[in-house]
Image 1 (cartoon, rainbow, N blue to C red):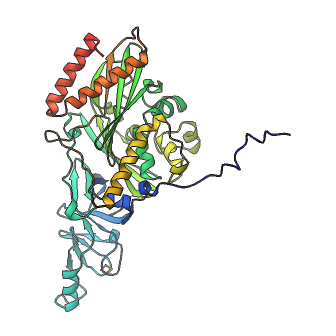
Image 2 (image 1 turned 45 degrees about the horizontal axis):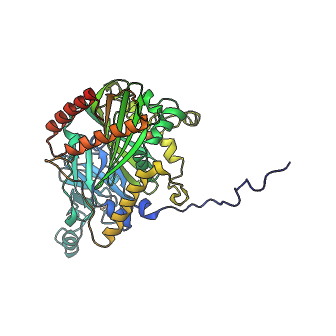
Image 3 (image 1 turned 90 degrees about the horizontal axis):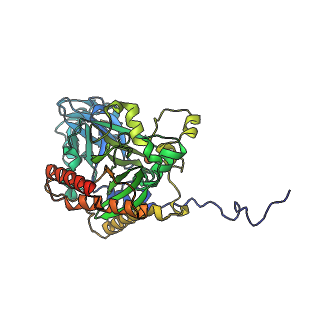
Length: 446
Ligand code: FES
Ligand SMILES: [Fe+2]
């Protein structure tokens, strides 16, 4: 047997497992962890938080979340201030949570209200009540999702109000999907419109609608901390523009998963999910989202757990390893890299431009924060943060010009239209976009 000695490079190219620590580390005291602690993040679903405390991990911190008997939500450090019993075994009361071990009672903002085993006016009991608190974080419950702010209290930003909250979807259903890998791996997929054609269309068969298998023209836009990746596909006489969106650090939207395939005209269909990717620790994360149903989202028949998983990752989670190999979804693609991928061994290509740009921006913000410059928060226009995730399908038959050029020109037109209308109210923006789309479609001005 003879082998060409020039060709086999296994030995010469040893695998380097070096990863980007600025991006991957999210714990307390790490530069990336500090950056992430300047934003509100979803941490749990309302439906999971009850009078029975729930243990959760966010940004590497072990926490307990609970509802008092008066329906107030507390998010506190897991271990009791006294001798570190887990408050997951605590009892919720009207005023807060009581540790199971010696009955200390804590309010939702961490005040030590009672130390019942001690003389209440003893010097030590007074001292501990005055000088110490249980670590606690502010929370906001909104439409079935609980958000928290884990950063320094003098830097707490306003709770962001996205326009997506005002879109008249038929229904929004909160969901949570876990990933066993670093948050950046999951986040990358949103700025990677090309994977939708391969993973969700060609490699695994059709996971969303048929049109996904088509390779489109890709365009990226950067607008402050908003990143947009457009995939513009030709579907017979139509042109389908799908825009994926990331608002730093971790807010994501796109178009519909099942309702759009480029075969029917559609004007400014909005995202089938409004979603955040939140690190639980450096080796795992959760996607917490609303799945959006109705004319501008996905069909209501997907309003169940399997439906949310399919919208999230193209496939359901509970499958045999053989099924996963036969038809991998996002979970398999991103978890298969290992829990923290070796960023330094990647070979980023022109189609990875969106990924390169947003990662660079995050790293810059992390470095700037080290020097004392606070990261930029999403910008409001007329009371809401305008978002761009959408599908538009226009009738635009091929012409005598290079079709790629036509697709690109249509993509740029639509993006421009979205940017030009961000100073309008939600209703006016919708109406203006609908009107202009209909005009340009009729006149064929691209
Ligand atoms: S450990 Fe919690 S009260 Fe003693
Ligand atoms: Fe995907």
